[in-house]
Image (cartoon, rainbow, N blue to C red; front, side, top):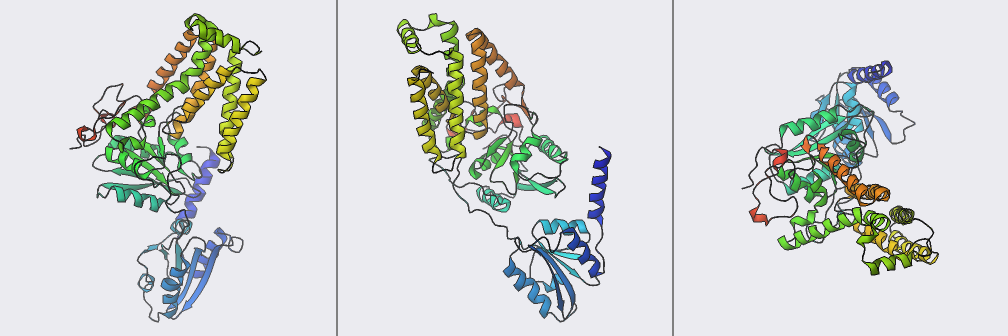
Amino acid sequence: MFPWQKQKTEAIEKRKARKISKNLKDNVKYIEEQYSYGLNYDFESRTIQGPSGRYHLFFYSTTVDTKQLSDHIVAPLLEMKKDIPVDRIVSVPNISPITNMGDVEKGLNDGSVIIFKQGIAEGFEVNLQDFKHRAVEKAENEKTVKGPKESFTESLPTNISMLRKKIPSKDLIAENISVGTRPAVPVTLIYERDLANEKVLENIKNRISSITVDNIRNIEILEQFIEERPRSLFPTLLYTERPDNVSNFVSEGYIAIMMDNSSSCLIAPITIWSFFHSPEDRYLRWAFANFSRLIRALAYFITLFVSATYVAVTNYHSQLIPIDLLLAIASSRERVPLPIIFEVLLMEIAFELIREAGVRIPSPLGPTIGIVGALILGQAAVEANIVSPIVVIIVALSGLSSFAAANYSINHTLRISRFIFIVAASFYGLLSLLGAILLWAAYVVSISSFGVSYFSPATPSTKSSHDTFFRMILKKERWRPGFINPKDWDKK
């Protein structure tokens, strides 16, 4: 630790350890100075002179329920004539005594009301939080036809409430770990104590506890701090916005990681197969679910390899193409001045530009711009003899297949990997493409997620519910995933 970091940490700890004074004026002066009273427009500092003594209230007007504040705190303090403890005057159940300024700051930052009384060397924290957030809505990024439609919101209590509704069990634990210093915010781990593996749970806790930054605002930032290989193309935590998906994973022995201000959560540990499974696979009948998985698997192969294979075969292995198709390709490229590799890369990059523009443009215009832009760009490029019609078809097929990805995180992996394979295929055709695929596969196998092999249960082979490639009939599923070593493997 650098000297300036040590000084900073010591200053923060000293401020938090400061005791509450019996002198009300000293407490008021300190808190008003720390919270820039007068400059901070929604920070309230109020003195109440009641029959039982003088009190002082601190709170953010934008984060507390002002009606409850008036009815259950201010009114009782003004009316109570006997000199009795504050926690017996205030008619609110969520009140707790605090003795140092660190707890005062934490309570104010969490949206509570802090009460001081003259002559008493302690304060009281009253939980009257009223943070605003969206109502529960449909999932935007993980849409399904069958099954629940609700998604998480930016309110952590609301999200935990939805999970407790789906898993009404005394063994469902919501454990908080603080992270950051300005301010320290809680990270909530959701797991079933009679299922979750203790070593995996401890691994996650240690990674979260070891984070030494000022603040982490949401789960998307936290993911980048706790993943094992930050530069890897492959995500090692599953990002999901669906409570039903999270409840399915938690019931299998996985651990969910949640934070306030995030409308999604992370699942750990995870394997590569989970990114190719859709939540809807559990709700469809056996044949329909497996047919859907087969189509998605085909889409993944197309998006990864169709453009690269076209570059390899047309440049180096034209003898593999039927003569009629070869003549058609040659005829379509007769007036195209660009080499095949540049032709394909040009269209792939153009498709990515259209995709990115469609995401960033406001939603009413995004789909329209994407469709119109693709049609106009493709048609104009063919008529200008910049690209051949078959390349437009191949790139469109490759791009369309990438949209079949069941998870948003793996979508980026597929898109970037596609460019790697295209460039590899331009060197020595299928030989260099095969070499790139082998290196790619070897790298994926080497990845682990919180101690769990990324390719489990395929390699190393472990006992599982046989839900890796295709799903079994649900009533025949018996075992939980063996690679996470749950405390109870048997579902029956």
